[in-house]
Length: 351
Ligand code: FES
Ligand SMILES: [Fe+2]
Image 1 (cartoon, rainbow, N blue to C red):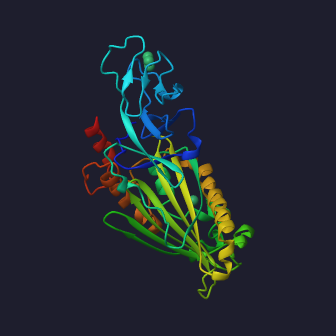
Image 2: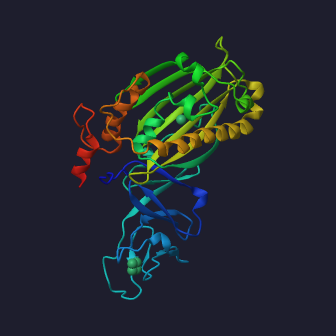
Image 3: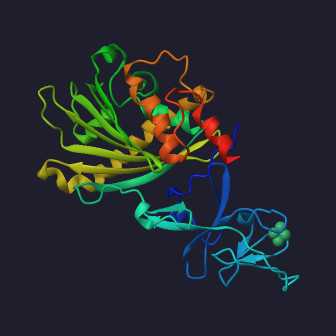
């Protein structure tokens, strides 16, 4: 497979901030490895995880008391800007390694090139009544395009999931709408919610309708899902959940999903329960994402191109999203209007 293009012009969530302590940690984005560590002041830093001397992984080294990261092999040490020194040949020059920008945002460390402005950090809901329930990460044993396509349709809901949304007997009662926009896609589903005991913790009742509306963007690849329930007559249930899911390609064959879960309450009397309900909502979201992760190896070999597939109406966003991904995320020149291996073409240009 062709290597993935570099994507760090966009900020990517890579690690919960709390899990970076004294020891360096290796993370991967688009097939490139980075050594994350904290300097003497505790500030997070990132270097290419490849010592310039003989390419040992710096993430297997240690942080010195002066805050420099020391290579495990011959002890060269690097500050957070990548300036290196060789203890055995101090006069040796040009001992530098590439350094990257790390920002802390919503409890996560976000990685980007140094010239990426902080304003490029994706917004997460903060002021519109949503409270933060928590975040989690799940590894998908599948390439980015497979993980993204899975999260771009709900047609698989009755078969891959067991709680959220409708079941097989109601599969023909789904209302669906999708819009392909210039830089994003918008999708809406409304369907009978199957009976699910745990949903009752969020005030969902038997016979309710499940509403899932989302927007997918590509700077980096992420979707914002807003899930709510209503009575058959349209009475809104008290809680509205929101999940911001980031699709980070680690390698050509694996994708890590980082999920930020939020909850809003539309019934003032229940507002005191919001923090607890937000935790519950996050756990419910986690189960659904884990259901997808469990299934995804089954389709991991799905080709990149949709050519030859008998797509249905629920797949409307998929082909358009490939193009948005190439243009906005991979930053490659727009390929032919045909859905023909454009990334493969684009990747040749990267070399
Ligand atoms: S490989 Fe890192 S110091 Fe030699
Ligand atoms: Fe799913």
